Length: 141
Image 1 (cartoon, rainbow, N blue to C red):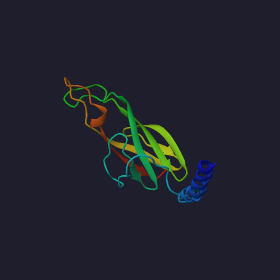
Image 2 (cartoon, one colour; image 1 turned 135 degrees about the horizontal axis):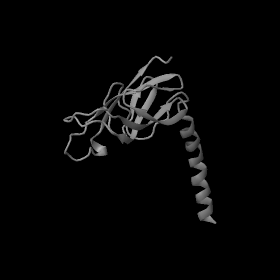
Image 3 (cartoon, rainbow, N blue to C red; image 1 turned 45 degrees about the horizontal axis):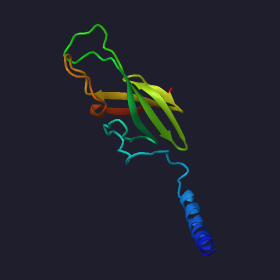
């Protein structure tokens, strides 16, 4: 009986802390899990969140990289698409962002404006940890 009474006492003392933790959430803050959010304008790696206005973007993975190698001549430039998690105040969406193409998300026009490094002809493919990305927000139409 003493053990059960002690457990009840422990749970009873922890319950208010759980409630306070739930109250500490800021209602208008973006949903973010992962490391610290990099400041707007930062160049980030896969899995690294970056601020973009009132949003937080996190490149999750490269789903396509068909860009023409830097040291080659191509008829078509190709494209790179990055699955990107977008967090806003109380919402989250994951969308494919293609380099140079604006995507409108909840009234925000978001663009992937840089994806480095480019592929070199005759070299190994770019490894996921080597990619770095930059994003911009512009006025939505």
